Image (tube, rainbow, N blue to C red; front, side):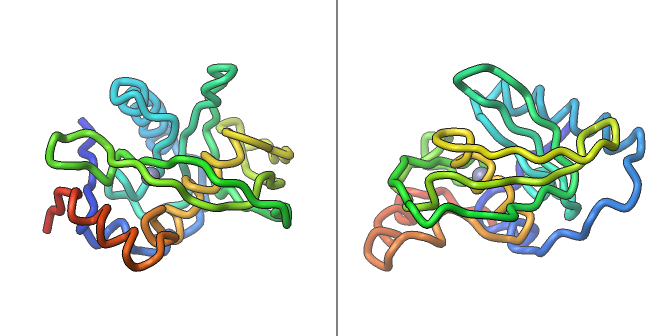
Length: 166
Ligand SMILES: [Zn+2]
């Protein structure tokens, strides 16, 4: 049974290490992560959110329901054009136990390279919602949370709503 790590837990601030071998254990963990993501109505979940400091994540394109299992994902190009979208995170919850949301500015499209669950190298250009999700999730692998992009006052206001766990 996986346990969600919440804002305030230092594991969310660690830089994760690359996956050297795609073990059955990692594949099983990713399957469990997909289940957990769906059960919590999320669209992405990265390994450190369940306390594993390795570079893998799962995510779903909400427009197509396509599931991605990404190992060692890397954003190799970002558009200079940015856009504003609302973001939330399964690790950043309010007092009601639900994610808190805030607008975040990020590149509108990205090119991503990763290894899939079969060990094949993949590359894709992503734009719109899925580009947003992959940027949010790969940030987790470097210990970065979406709240880090908010300006002082906005971040303070959001953090007042967040139920922090130490
Ligand atoms: Zn998140």
